[in-house]
Length: 103
Image 1 (tube, rainbow, N blue to C red):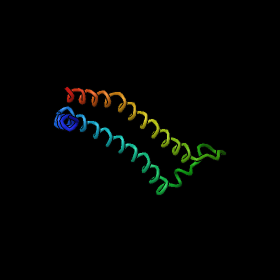
Image 2: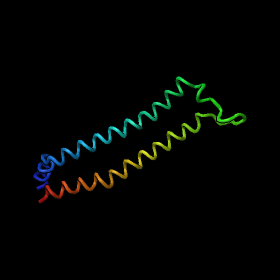
Image 3: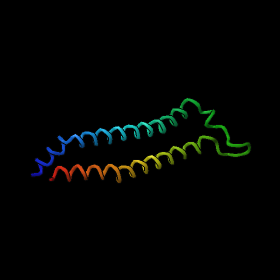
């Protein structure tokens, strides 16, 4: 019985569309994450003077510190966006596809 359901799910065009949409979304989110992390690392590697620029005269903190914190915050926000969509839209669609296959 489970094998039949599995085959019905795999052959369902809605499932194929769902997998494609989910994969594209995951790739876009991954690319955004890679740009943020590697962009910051490349900035550290190739433009240290910019990152060492003080926020204002007399301050100890340089531009690099808030940018690093920004990368962390960006990561948290991106993760929250992905999880929110996965727990609402993606879960709803997958449940509907499974229910359709079990009928």
